[in-house]
Length: 315
Image (cartoon, rainbow, N blue to C red; front, top):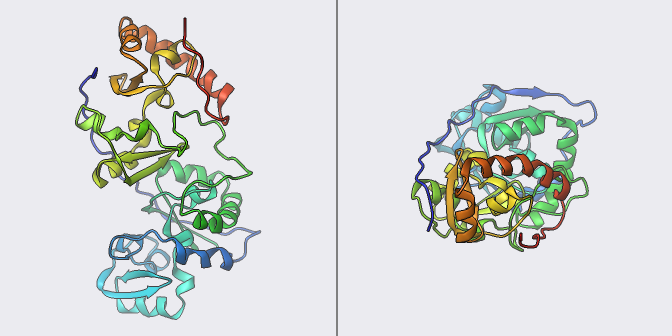
């Protein structure tokens, strides 16, 4: 194994004020799309939705308020906690008014045809609908076109539910420029846990029980803690250059990797195809890394959104 030690800290959770949006062209929730939520819900092991936060408080208090487990209701297969009996009564009277949209998954992710976890602090109320996002990056993507993204999320949600939350094919490809080294099931790093490289300084197999989707790839993890740390800042923890051989990228090529051959350069996780590729790269680490950084945008522009195809080995 060829590696370099590195440590990192969990990034701070996003904290955002409530955003209330009224859209001129969307007057009410798409009831048919939301009915599908009963088949796919973002709940914990006890069936509790919204991480136990009170759904009514998002509307009345304009902030996330933790609910009390002793004050609860069930609706569409999920358990809701409330901060007060008054909030429970309001929910029980009109549960469809207060339920989170898209099964309490990230609304922006659904608009891209997949599911992702949420941070309750990213919520907004759009035409009296409670929507939540995964992180600040998702909030920015969603905010670029709230009306259009909501319409796409409503359109795709039943299909996402039918596909078990996994990525569906979408005609409006919003992220067409991904160039990522994945297998036929879209799993990156051959199933190795990206956080283990950082925290344990060694390659460790992940499992299908702990996964996170990011930039067109599914990452697998050895534990929920590793998954959550990756989710806190995927841009930092995901391998550089789409998980392709860094030395090959410095030559303008896309080549596979051996996940056990890794090192850290410039605060990024790099992988190499073979020991020879590793040796050639570290013979001039700064120069080769600079070349890879310079050539990567051109590779993405040329091959983004196309089926994965490796280049021939360099001479």
